[in-house]
Image (tube, rainbow over all chains, first blue to last red; front, side, top):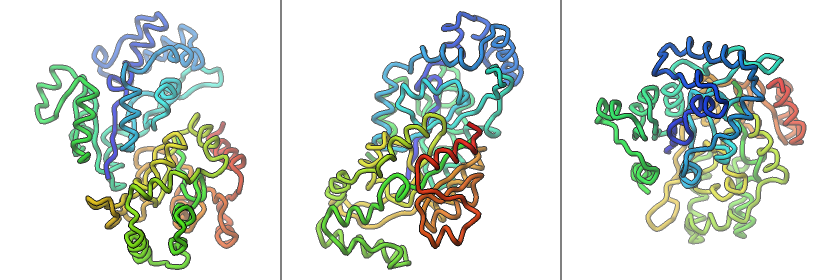
Length: 201
Length: 201
């Protein structure tokens, strides 16, 4: 029994921090793990900036509510969910992406959580588990699922390689070159064909 | 991080085989595990009856498409999905309940699969894993989730007891009496209040 696990940012939505930096007009928030590989340091830096700008969860959600899914993502998910169970597996935070998930008709999302103070300010974050994406597909496999996965980034490689079919979707030339064993595509149509092919549909 | 696992039949939909027996006018299909505790024997008996009535997956889906979710289930799920990830954990079969899940706006469903021949007739069934419901909540816990669960039957007890909050929903007097440690309710409103209470909302 197949289940499809999709990375969120880059696959069905834009990069949230970059979109948020643009919507909020705070360019310092454009920094990602490419510039600061220490994720914990990066998150603490982001939390400090949000606090300095007096942006609590309410304002952040309001800003993110103006971010839209990638063009074609909603239709892609709609078709995919008509024949496969789908989990969006992401290192984003529940409290950020509620409005975006609503725009995608609420697919199930396995991600992380922010710790929010009584004043609505973000004080910390909590990863759901170590190695979130790989651990998630392994958990699904333990439940008897055969996993299919798609993602674009380094942190997706674990779940892509552990799956029956792992597809690099709109990934970088560098990652595609380093992983010729993984099929890659930039189009939803091709990704859909790969998934259907694997499922024998 | 919480996730809510709901049994399907008796919680958000009617008992599928009973509803199907009524819709199709085949009373022999009303037999459940209460009358035939050997599940494998029961499923083979059902498959034989369907074949005798020349009911393939297409006709079965067509019949089940006239079955509706329980009154209030859609609204309950809609509210629940606005603040919690939700998985419907069921021993039903993917191919049966597609139309019913559509009526519920496609919540994620972890269930089992039927084996269907080229002629569209059901030839066999495949359980996703042993002890499906308990194994599922354990898998979710392994991924870092704190599980909340609701169900009505004996086969739900494992997942209810293994969860931080396990609620008997519209269960039998016998089961409720035998499990005073589990809260029970017959109303969606009360179930929602119990879930929100556990999540601190």
